[in-house]
Picture: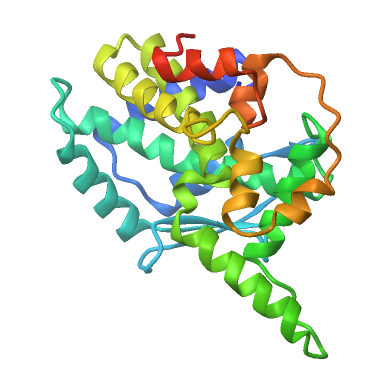
Length: 269
């Protein structure tokens, strides 16, 4: 399940957001409200920051160095317009734009959860995931050394380049997409939007296969092999007590039977 929605009241807020977006434009006050409500909290206190600009160059992005979600209103409106028109659905573009907006927001909030899990601020499902999230977030946000570490810095730069080159297929993006797309497909199902439900479910299942196309190793191990840091992966805590379904969702190694199942048919909820 998504890290974000834990109660029926929170799910209702998403439904209310869809209704609001049918007739209203996205503005700063609205974005502040939705991020504050859906963002991770501890005893009611928001655990992340946000930075909203009327005009900018970034659509939406979680930035580990500031523990912040940055959003540009002009860019997010442009992104929604372009993407809503790219899908040929019977539902009008305005309805689809609402679901796409919630996907963008929840996707970045899921990245925030990954960061907080890696920093041990939020409890992790297991230690290997916590260690992977921590290491990959640090890799994309390297420390500024007072004294030079040329070998370490060069290796980190190579691994960062390799990660960014195919980041949509690797662990952080994979898992954020799975959680947010699963949430949005569930929401569309609740609202009786069959086409939108099937659209997000198909996209979720596409990302679910990442890490299992070539073998049953999973996305965590595949990511570390592909970015030439498998030695780091081997040092992680590998004791795991999870179901095959949970392992698939999180990108852990699974049985060959489960891998065949995930590649040969749709994964139904």
